[in-house]
Image (cartoon, rainbow, N blue to C red; front, side):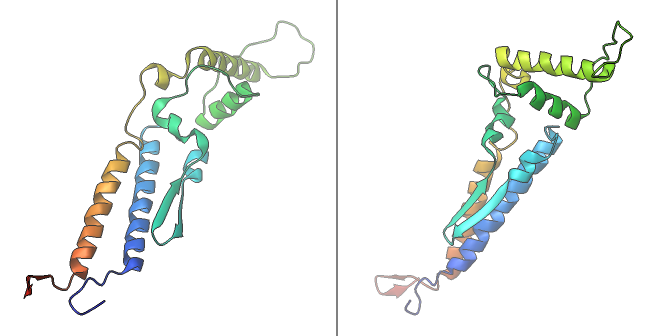
Length: 177
């Protein structure tokens, strides 16, 4: 560029984008923890920041990430959903009421395991027919929906400041401003 023109540093802009997206990632993680939505830690572990080029920064999360705010709607459930719910219960530290056996012969499951399986089945049935409680109550907007506009605003302010610093001077009608 000529003297007095804009000498914009794309590496600085790229660094600002990376910092802001990393900040957004951390805010989302904090919101997940504050809301008590962290059971196994897989959702948090799935949040990754990638920068394929200097002018692009991406925050990735696994496919069901959106249900953190909307909840799961009723409908078709995946194969083994009761087992998924049972693992979720284990991760959350939830247990069903033990269901004792009425016979004295050897049994495959303990009374506690029977209670846990029964509770997992009931939860899976309710989610399949009615949706999750979060979905039935209308969802929430405090996990990532409020983070995205705030991040865009901060990013814009920081990039404008960077451009402002890069502008040496502006010639307007042959006068330097």
